[in-house]
Image (cartoon, rainbow, N blue to C red; front, side):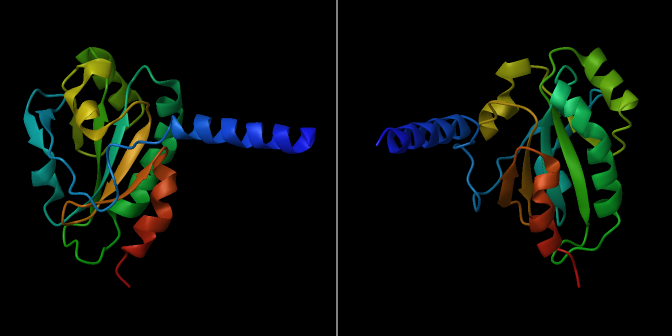
Length: 174
């Protein structure tokens, strides 16, 4: 009986711990909320404009986030691999849109350069954890990613970019 009780408590604890890392605001099948914020050059860029007939990995991160920075080399390789591929119903292919939860532009821009985040779409409102984009998407931890199809619908949400590979591969043109 003690073993069953211990097992039940352990399972309940694991479920609770895992649930705290689940984004419950955004659901698969939901239209992706539009975002419009400045890029590092101070120019406004808009998610819906970028998304036009394009599959997007929407990546929330920050220059001060150790796990984000550790994941960036893999994210660069991921981008190189998938940005050159053809996708069904996505005549404009695939790209990454990075949304930074930084508070200051300088470390954000330096991290983009240092980590060689070569895709052209980076945005931030420089609100840190009070970022309007993070609030809109229910982001409570970083890194966190959303896969958005060419019609602007969320088809996956992930803790790491690599977790979307199975869903992304389903969209590849055959």
